[in-house]
Image (cartoon, rainbow, N blue to C red; front, side, top):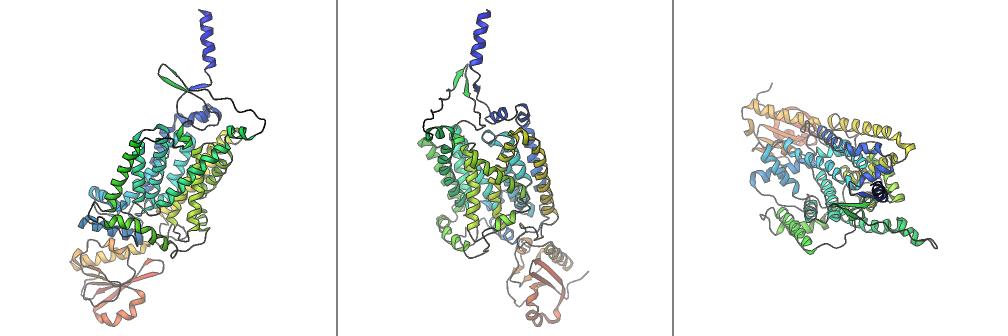
Length: 560
């Protein structure tokens, strides 16, 4: 009996290099401190849930506090037409893809045609963006995923754009969904993940034309990452070193009582195809199913559910020529502008992300990490080279940089001498980001000292809206009050007066006897002889920096 026990002990001892297939992130914990890093594994779900709650708490309150931006007003106009007329026609010359409007239609059905309902769409996609980081824990490691999700949750720009009824948050969320779906498919080879890839890709292209930039950058990153990671692996290094014997073959996985046991990795990188992002062979039926799903979503959205077929599909391809010309002609900024805009507001993600990128270049922890590093470098380079620049595009760079920031912190945790610095670094990062997130989104949301506040409508515009509505009530005509906007700059005011059928936006001076006239201050000299003594000048209101509007009310309308 004792000899049999000794033999069993020898078997168990010999099996130590083989470990049960579990969360590959656990391998990192074994290398970098055992029980200490296991804390992030054991408490991963509660911490991730807490991060999502913080993200929601920063994004959901007072969605109507910040006045609509010019672009939000245009998007609101398209959504209003879709809701009331049941029709949307994609315009490749001036506007972006249709997905935002159809998601907004769903929100309108549930909550009504309100500012809060419209902005709820990017809020939910902003929460999805944070949440999609956590399933990647298997490939990034628990600590890295938590740090990346936490930084995105409180990023001032990510919060601000999640409360902005424009396309960018949707675009970036679908970008991460695409990467996650591809990663899961290459690891597990289940058709549902390839179908999810098709859904993410279709929504990405149906959201904004710049989705093609993300896809091309990711494809290039995968190709380069394949060769770079192979070049950086010890096995490849051994083959390149003359006289050095090749490394011993790794033990194969074994099956014991229905459980697969695989060799433990000492470098913290997960095993399996996902870590390598190596396509291998993909069954034809999987490809066919994914193609059908992609085409169905793409055709339905761009054809406006066949109400604009086939013109919508034709325009979806023609837009790339138009978009390229637009990018070269407007909003021209120097090549370093995005980096300048990110400092100091996004300094925690930028600094830690650059450190994580250097770690990726030096250590090449896994092919996925290399792809993420190349994604961050590639997307930043491409958008910096393009002369057209707007602050919301920064969100495309913040995503891969936040993932790399997670790697930087997890690498600090691996080194015992640096481990004590992790709480300090994270505390400082969250403190800085949290302060800017609250100050930007709830105090200085219309203050252009923040780079994200870009030719934004001021809160004084809402004072104009309140004054017009109060005057309409005093006139006793309510929503049937006649309002004439002769100012050439009036967006996003059509959104705020969508329920006033007699509100006309002419963009130039016209003859009128309606109850109210809103003009640009530069039009007053031309307007004065036309209105003479029939109207009273109520006051001047700032629409956005450099644009002041003046309100005239017909003299017979009661005043306070």
